[in-house]
Structures are given as C-alpha cells and as structure tokens.
Length: 572
Ligand code: ADP
Ligand code: MG
Picture 1 (cartoon, helix red, strand yellow):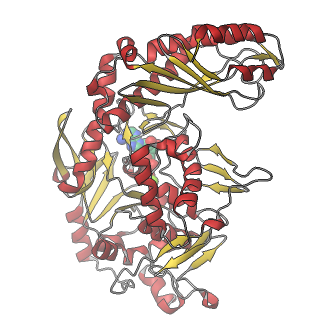
Picture 2 (cartoon, protein in one colour; picture 1 turned 135 degrees about the vertical axis):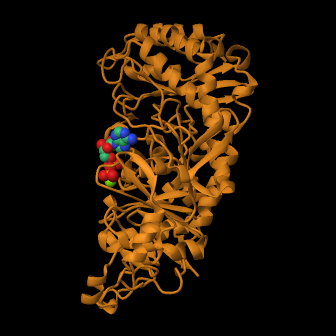
Picture 3 (cartoon, protein in one colour; picture 1 turned 90 degrees about the vertical axis):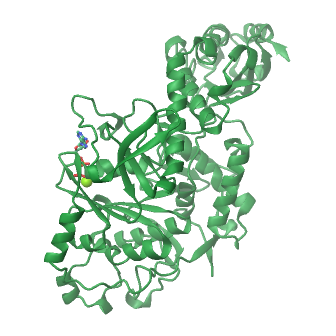
C-alpha cells in the first residue's frame, strides 16, 4: 500500500496538467491514523464526483462495544456518524473552488429517519465512511495544490472530529443509539400488546411545513395527549416506561373537523414504520413494520392484478381477474394498490380520505337506489374492510371526516378535536344504532382471494442505448431504469433518496437472481431481503457505494409494479 506522502507527491506532479492525469491517484493510501481508498476518479470536473472511502482502524476509532454490538445499535451509531461527518464537512471543507464540482466533499444526507445506510459502516475492525469528492480543476487543468488541501487538511480534520469516539459528543451518541434501540424494541412488542401503532404522550406530530420535515416549533405545536381509554404503558430497554395511545388491531376510524389534525396523525403512523432521530417529535411514535399507505393514483399502470374483491363487471366485459391498464382510474388504482399490498403481505392499511377515490370508499343509500348493483362494478371499501380483517387478519386505520356510514364497520372511532384525540367509539356506536344506515352491504360473504403473480424477468430491461445497464435516480420519487421512468410520487412511504437508489438497483438484483417467471413476487421479495439481512446493502451493487439506504419490500414491490413494461403470470 502506498503512503499518504506518495499521494502528495503525485498531486504536486500532476498540478496544472490535463484532468485525466488525476487517474493516477486511484488506489489505496496509508495515512497512519486511517486508510484512504480512492475507488473511482471522475472523468472531468463536471462528471459525478470521485468516490473515496476512509477506514479508521479500531485502535484509533475506539468505539465501545456497547455502541454497536447489536444490529439496532450499529444502525443507530452509523446513522449518527453519517450526520456528524456531514456537519464536519460543512465546518472544515472550504467547498467550491474551480470549475464544476471542484472542491466539493460530501456524504449522504439523512433526513429525520434513522435508516440502515451504506454511508458509514462499523465493525470490530473499525469504522468506514464513504464520501464523494470533486477533484478540483481550473477549467480542465488539475489544481494539485487545492487537491492537496482537500486530502491533507480537510479530510483528516473530518475524520478526526467525526469518526473517532474521543472527539464525539458522548451523550448525543448514546441518546441516538438508545432511542433507535427503543423504537425497534417497541415495534417488536406491538404484536404481543395487540397493537398496530403507538403514539407517546408529548409527541410532536406536525411538521414545520409541507417541504420541511423538521418538527413544528414548540410555541405552535400542540403536544400529543392520549385519550384515557386507549392509554397504555410500555417498558422500553433504555427509556423505561413510556405512556401513550395504543391503537389495537381491527378497524380504527380517525374522524373530526377539517384542519383538526387527522392527516397529521395518519402521516405519523405512515412514517412510524421507520425510526426517528432524537428531537424529531415522532421518536417512539411507532407503527408495525408491515403497514402500507394506500391511496388513489390515477394514471398509474396496472399489470395483471386480480382486483375482483373490489371490481367486477366492467363495461364491455373487461376482465378484472387479471386487470391491465396503462392509465388507471382513481378507483381501479386504489383497488390495485390494496391487492398489491396484500400480495406483499401487508398487515395494516393506512387510508386518508384526502387521497382516496370517493366512489371506492363509499356508495350511499340513494346512489344504491339510482344505480343498481348490477350496473356498478365497484364494491366500495366500506363493504370489504371488515372482511379484510376477518378473513386475512389485515387491520385498517382510516381517516374519514365525511361518511358516518363507516361507524358500522369500525371497532373504534378516534375524534381529533383541535389536535387532541378523543375516543368517541361509544357515541359513534349509539348514533349508528339511532340512525340505522339505509345502505345495503354489497361485500358478499368473503373478502375474496388474493391472487399472486410471478414477474417475467425478460420484461424488465435495464439497458439504454449502448449501455447494458443504466439505472439512475432523479429524485426520491423518480427512477430512470433503462429506457423507462418509474414514477413513485404516490409511494408515500419512501422517505429518503437513498432508499430510491437502493430500489433502483434492487429491481435489477431481484430480476437477475430470483425472477424466473414462476416464482411469485412475494417470494422474490423475501429472498432479496434474506440477502440484505445477511450481507447488507452492498449486495445490490458491484461497486462500494455510499448512497444506499434500506427500503422496505413494499416500496420495491411498488416500483416493480409501476414499471411500464412489466409482464406477470398469475400463480394459482
Ligand atoms: P385535517 O386532516 O384534519 O384536515 P391536518 O392534519 O392536515 O388536518 O392539519 C391541519 C393543520 O394543522 C396542518 O397545517 C398541520 O400542520 C397543523 N397541525 C396538525 N397537528 C397539529 C398539532 N398537534 N399542533 C399544531 N398544529 C398542528
Ligand atoms: Mg386531512
């Protein structure tokens, strides 16, 4: 292995030369306190920046065993370190100098969620961080001295203050690791407690704005208070006893006037499948891992989905046992979204009237009179929600401000009143008794079967032009895969661009390893996650990338299901 001084000599030697001279610096260097790997050197100053890794060995990094010995703690520690590296870069790196990305140093930028990531890894041997660097140039000439400053002044300072235990804020580090462990423990316990979600007293659920995911400022936010009847106490490994609202399995309605905080509560449940950082306000607001947000998504493609539990007898005899469309309606898209979630083994559906198709959710008495059942292909969700729980054990939490007909189907009704939840189950039950719904149930005796599908690998082509594989992520909700664009804007439980990066690569991984045209999608997903559990996110790429964050199987399934050329075979 070459020494740091070798790199310094090279940088001085190539100073002022054409940009390709940088290629000479790819390789491994021993900096004494850490090892530097320059894995990829960019072709020019405007290309995606160069990829480097630093590996700080255990005797320098010195992280105590109790910060990483379990998976939960390790994920918390790595997430914490990623954030500290990002901060250190802002503090010590001088940033842009020269053309294009010259001078840039960056690491993955996490949001409010704590996720398993490839940006930082910790093992018994030490800690590794993956960064990108824009090797500096004036025009297209190497700025060797500037590069020298980046490698010999800025990077060492980032390593020293963000990747060595001695220099880190110990209390902050343990708070991060422990709050992550508590959230994992709480999520694991929900099932035993008969709950699908938990929201602690004092939680701050609203966000600063629609484009700012940080918590609403304390002066404005009304902290969460549980209705007494739903209050439960849970013992956590680090925090000890925590009290809050437990939502049991079954069918739960969230009602209340407009602007009283219904969607905000539901959103907290949607992202409660992930852990949150200390200070987020939603830490310890936890939902079962298999909760899936369901919404209408008109315009999406649907491929071979058996939507008969909800839709039959379309005009012109169109088949709904293997329904295909390039341009779904609100109701058919919502039906397909539910069936696809069930196909991937969802345990809880989360539905908000704000993003639902009205005719999918409800059909009232008068409309039943006017449009007879034989003329209406849709069986509304209200007639299936109980059967879904009874036959498949799948719970639902539903925001409905507009239809009291749902009272008949509900196990409990939570009313939001000026951001305060109250348990109004009894009142809702009494009203349902007093004003009997005049509508007729149309759901039949059973929910109906969930037909599983096997994706055909040949229908997923990652090539583009002369490139055999071209996969890119445009933003957290858009993947460019081969010639196709996958639109994930309605897949609301993707919370981090790193997940999208992982999903793009996981589609190809799943296709190459496990899709054979016979194996059900559910099983393909299981196998991919078995590999991810065993070997980590690096299995998804032949290169060592720092940009992946762990997605859930539902979001990978969602991306595959929205792929515009996908073909499937139903497995009966
Ligand atoms: P709904 O779905 O009932 O119409 P929302 O959940 O969309 O209401 O909330 C309406 C507004 O109130 C949003 O701007 C939201 O940020 C704010 N809000 C929600 N919960 C709280 C709270 N606990 N404290 C303060 N503001 C809140
Ligand atoms: Mg709303």
